[in-house]
Image (tube, rainbow, N blue to C red):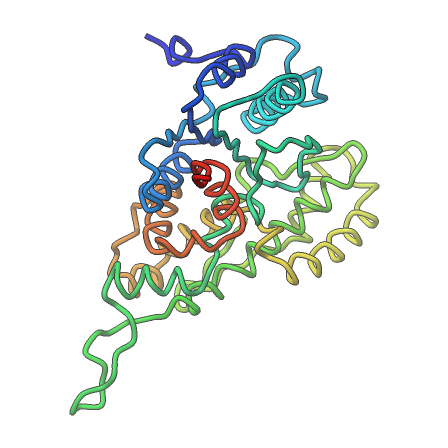
Length: 317
């Protein structure tokens, strides 16, 4: 039986939200988002709140077009939030509802009280942190730096800190983000080819990841038969690199960071400092481990505070 058997149309979902006084629900884009918010509601002791991913609500033909949206999971949820807002202006929507989407590079223009966006580029942006990586190394692996004993040598060889890992990844991630931003500015816009991660080079001895954004830009334009636009595109890329360096949390794609991180972990340096623990790990598995390292710290982020307020029952009067 297909997943669509269990899904509502947007109109059905809105009607359901109007008819259920005690409904408390969070709609998210994907499985990781769902699980992160499910853990959050457990910490908040909100046992009546259900967390669903986007597969539970599917648009009908015309739903996205009416909202000026292009097809996609994020667009589906923005359409849901728009429909809930429209309904709330006509009659009461009694459910305690929050629709959570990634901010991305283009925040949706939907002005809905039900729509909540990540503070950074995506949910994964919350783990782009030296502290989170340090927790992964220290608690997850037990391989952090330790004081020396009588021999003046740390008892665990090949140790590292979260900062040492972060700094090996962030430079290449900034290059990837600057490239994406410059390609988006072109008319019509372009995107890096799907296997751009192969262009990321990781030094065997030191584990530093590097990406030549200028060379990759030229390659993308050549493949699109638009090499004549290279000079202006390179100027835009260099300007974007400055912007991304100043605000990596907002402008580096979480998935890009995690892809590069996975490649660093698979490198000879990465295998040494982690004891080979992550050499076969995929990006989704690494991201879940990082959210475990982040833990309840995410509750202090503005998005999580706002969602908690939205789905919590009203204070008794």
